[in-house]
Image 1 (cartoon, rainbow, N blue to C red):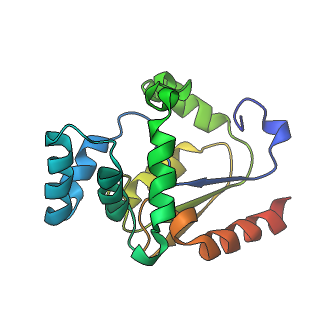
Image 2: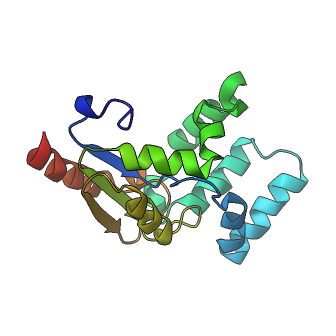
Image 3: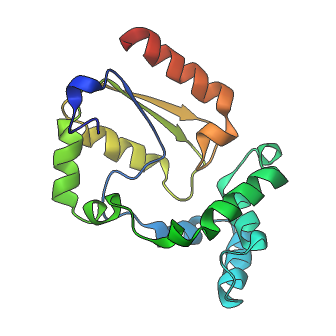
Length: 173
């Protein structure tokens, strides 16, 4: 949206999103601590990767601040991923496989952009934020790295994300 309709976007906030293909999601499991790797492997071997227990493991792997990972959040995440269309490719998926097209889209973004990243993200490591920033060539980019936060900064560190978002909002909206 920000690339196609730059006149309609005054500021953009992105949090732990891939900059394009290839993204090494499979490598995420290899970057996980050994105990999480074993639990994830058991879920896959049992043929129940979308069970509540397996989503619990995945989310434990995706949060540093475990107190933010509630049973309600695990249920919500499980229910969301059980919906019939949850495994269907989104319209963005084919685009994400075309690195040249993604670079062009990112280069077309004109709105000042804030990147908010967890420093402990095994899925999209901090280096991914730098790659994304380097591809946003048509705008200014601010980067905020949140220590002791993993893959879901808005869920894990809502106050810090809100503060960063308010700052860019005051400056540009």
